[in-house]
Figure 1 (cartoon, rainbow, N blue to C red):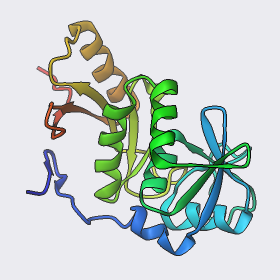
Figure 2: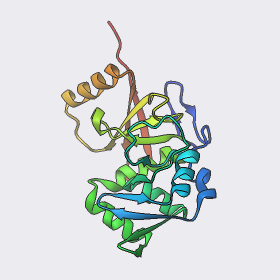
Figure 3: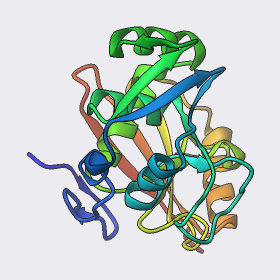
Figure 4: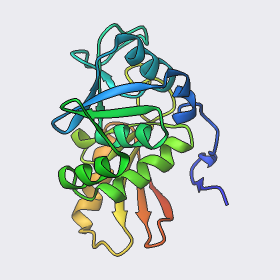
Length: 206
C-alpha cells in the first residue's frame, strides 16, 4: 500500500522525479568521506547529481540559483547512504573503498538515531521529494517540491519514535516556528515495523 499524506499531499508516490533513479545516469560517482560529510570532487559528476536530483550542496555556495554548478558538492551522511545503497555512489575513506555496511556503522556512530532518520529520509526521497536538513528550524527535514533556493520548503518534518514522549511545550514550539516561517509541520511517527504515519499540524484562530 502506498503512503498517503493529509492536507493535499494525496498519493505522492512518483509525483516528483527527484529519486535515486533520476541520478543513475551520473553513476559511477566517487565520494570521499571527510568528517561527517562526503565530498564529490569531480565537477561533472557533482553537477550531474545536483542538477538531476538536487543532491548535495555546492561548496561555498549557500543558496545556488542555478543547477549549472562548477564546484565540488558536499553530501550529508543521509544522502551518502541513500546514493551508496542505490549503487550510484562509491564511497572512499583515505583512499580505501567503504562498503555500505561499513558506511552505515560509521553513520550510526556520528549521527544520533541515524536509522530512524535515514528510513524517513529514504521514504521521502523515494516518493520524489527533495529533502534537506532543517536543524536551523528545530526540525529534522525541510521538504521541497522544486529546487531549494528558488522554492521555499512547504513542509518541515520532525521524526519521532512511536513511544517517544513529547513535551507539550516542544510541540507548541515546533508548530509556532513552522508557522512563523510559513511552513506546515509534519510529525513522522515511526513504528517498530518500520512503517510511518505522518501527522500534519496547522494553526487555527479561535
